[in-house]
Length: 267
Image (tube, rainbow, N blue to C red; front, top):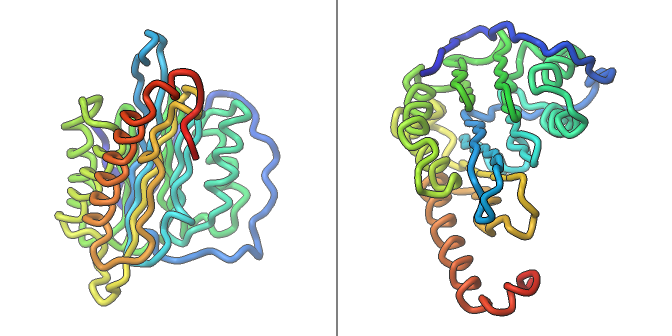
């Protein structure tokens, strides 16, 4: 189940931790128009029987190069910064999560220091919480969803159905057998099918996904960090890129199975 917030941002409950002082973002140039994204947290058990957490974020928009602007993830959480994009909100957000702050405290502190916050969307997840904010000067249609272990936000959309369908697609396959990267692409595809970005005059688009987990970095598959930077069919191309990368990763595992049992894969 999830709650939808359209056109306004909800109040979030803090943990009582004190955020480090966030400097003003005045004078830093934002980038317009990142459209819709999803952040996810999932618990799982690794091959050794240890409890782990993975975080994922995926995004698409009718502008090139969204993967350089919006999605951020680490072993501590996932964050997406969008609408009139302030990239520092994503970078600092992940840094604050690494310092031990809860996601709501971290992102609220950054928004409080950002003079442009009425034009921002910022959302994310950590090990325990979710957070989503939509400034009241974002461009219609805009809004966000907070589920139990995920957040979805969008702006410049054809309507509310876009984030509804992204959330529903993720929920229908949450913790499924398919890799999270694949399920994130499915969620983007659902939003795109529901209408997506309303700016049909902008043909050059982009999409990206990023998945991180609490295992050692060498265990992270090569298909967990993918971008399509300039395309007229970004979500379809991201899916093709994912499928090709996954096939290549599996081929590498097969070819170097003996060697990789004793060390890292070849570069």
